[in-house]
Length: 62
Image (cartoon, rainbow, N blue to C red; front, side):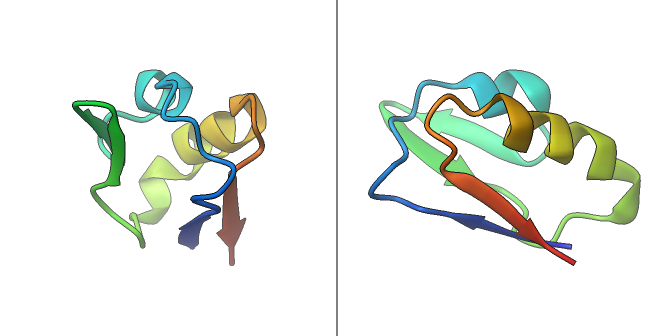
C-alpha cells in the first residue's frame, strides 16, 4: 500500500493523525507522512484516516 496526499487539498487538520499516529504527524501546522508505504498491519488505521479526511486529500494505492 502506498499513501499519497494531495497537498493542495490538505488543510493539516489532524484527523488522519488521530486515526493513524504511526503514519501521520503534525509538525507545527504542517502534516508529515512518517511512512509513505506502511506495513499491511496498519491498513485498517490508514483506511480509517482516508475515509475521515474532511478534504479527501489522502489516497491509497495497492
